[in-house]
Amino acid sequence: MEASVEVREDLRGYRMEMLPADLRAHTISVSLLASNFCPTDRNVYVERVLRAGHQRTEEWPSIAGREIHSMLQLLHAFAQRSVKDFASAHRSLRNFDIRKTVMEFADDHIAEVCERLRADEKCYRRQINRLKVQLQQIASFEALAVAALLNYRIARTGMAARTLPQEMDTLFDFRAIEQQLHAGWLGLTEPVTPDFLYRRSVIGDIKTGQVDAGPGGLFELTCTAYAVAWERVYGEPIDWGVILHVSHSQRRNVPLYGESQIYRLDTKARIRLQLKLEHKLCLIRDGQDPGYPADRERCGGCVYETVCYPEGEEQ
Image (tube, rainbow, N blue to C red; front, side, top):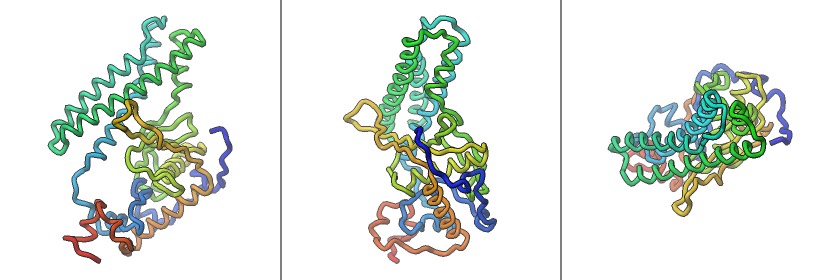
């Protein structure tokens, strides 16, 4: 990510003008802003104007996604903490085994997650068992990656224990995990919380669901919104966005990161964010029904289908 990214200066968060007050009064969450599953954006109208959210209880993919999301964040935070603790307590690296330490932490966490979910009547044992395997795969892969990179550095440099935290920061410079940012000036519901910041130049989010990777899609809009909010608060340019997309296959014994994406948060991406913000906030402010998708089949399975078509009524 050393290539330059062209960004018009007035589109940086620390230079960007506030939206008009009449739009900022109707804030929107990053997830609702970036969602594209309804072609007319009627989901925004239903949720924010009619205030008639869907009636379904939380579905399993969302529950599993949240646990995967949490597992990844906790693993890296714990690994960084463990390295610092070891360095402060030892002079020798003879007993340094970060993979074993991380796996012991992960096993305890996974056991707690499974116990909590088994107490929830909405969660089926088969689903929980499958999630347990997925979390174990993530933990094993991430622990091995951390250990391999750190041990390689130890083997190459012959470093002392006291320098371990510095090496860890160099290799895994993740900061601001779930950092809460002020973004009301942009018309976004506060707080805005990116999942991670890498080397203070790359903003990131973890996704587990449907892939929406194109220009102006869920992934790019999410990264761009987080970047602009970060720039406003800290006055630092963010030129790149990363979506860490996690999925699984029963034919593999490792997590799949193949749908992960890297975005240049350039002038075009920021203009797309502005246009999307203005469009959806105007929809909320004006309270005008944007209408139904021309293709009724697009609505099949939508969580808002029973709201838009009560008792199967057609429009």
